[in-house]
Length: 391
Image (cartoon, rainbow, N blue to C red; front, side, top):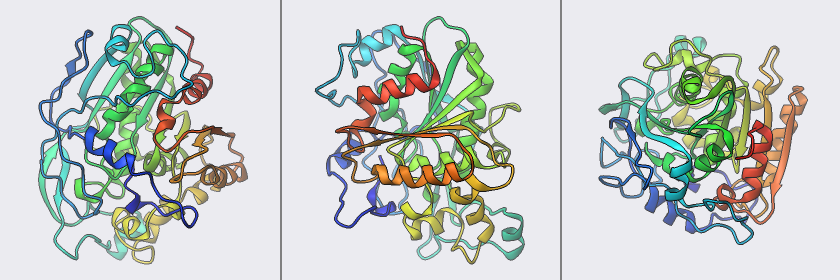
């Protein structure tokens, strides 16, 4: 779910499969200001409307300022999929075994659509702001405010279950998290409390530094605050990030700074926004795998203009910094992934090991950047890591 315009090719000649663009166009829907709704156990939620596929231009503005909930992905399972009682992608059946609530606000009103005047996408901070590491929201005109949304999936009865917060790739409009619902339901069916959360992944939706990272941390804090109500253990919160989500996700996991403090509108009271473990799924990590122009927009300016922002989001430096967090880390990569091949995970793993952080890298054989989400090996690796009991 990450437009290739924002990612650097790992090796010359590698190209992103065209199928992802079609999947993105079919699945994207805005979500931002709707109220939470309990999903009918007999069927999946039906969206009131859907958005057109987002432009891959960082300066694009979504055509609708108030997006709505998207349906779950319904891609075909891989040929070697085992015979689960509900199948790998059967939301109707899974809904009978999993209690789910779609569209829960986890922040107050935040900017979620920003018009960027031509030539002003990059907003260098003043020298004082750069020195303090604080940069205002991207320059431009705010055209909409909304509450960020997440969804919960949990077994009907449980206690002390592991908690997983899943974030999508990007940069994409709010509401794209729906493509994670299939894996979220399966994890919940296996015995976990799962949340799928939006975050502002690009400046045109109010993202940037520190907003993008603060959104992810706030989702973690909200899950920690509310997990016990669903049978989850707030002391065992795992962050699982797909594609571009691996960049903000790894920063939040490794930073000594709790980015949740940068989200004044966060709906969590005082819970930690740092995960207890981090899982990258076909993800990218660090500056080398994200386009330089987009990074400059996301971080508030070029490196020489806002050096503090770049230092604060450099995962290679964070992994070896004195006093850094040491979450357990699992990196999953598809053997047929041309966007985030296993060499990307290996590079990140080397940085983590240099900092004394426990990390495992797993190749999901035959999986592409997208099919890894429905591969039985991915589900098996996740349930093994989090210690979810079998149904």
